[in-house]
Picture 1 (tube, rainbow, N blue to C red):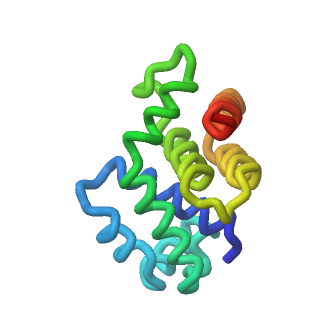
Picture 2: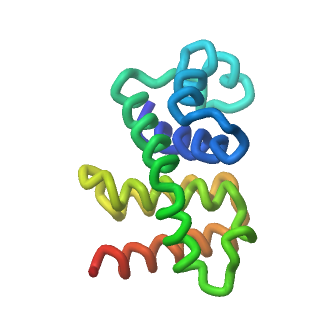
Length: 149
């Protein structure tokens, strides 16, 4: 499994956080097992290979970070989503942006451009082209404004 696959799985799990009251750690413990991956492998190739320890740690760090910093990340999304109320933004799009913003802000070992480019590429799999442009615009504005201050 490569990092962009692990990132995409983290986006799936961050999205799933919207629909559960479970603590992030409990969700991660349930989803990051060989059995869980085997059950999903027929539906999505993304799950054909369970993560190794390093990949699982990366996924856990992203999902925990999105949960812990959710309000802050959503504030940035709202700040740069000019003319949009946060409630109108598709939940997959917000999950993609939360993960990318968390990487940019809290994972200095990940190049900012890589986090943003990968987020946009992942978004292309799940969102309409207009929404992908919207995500790219928000992440670009966020990166230029917040990282230059």
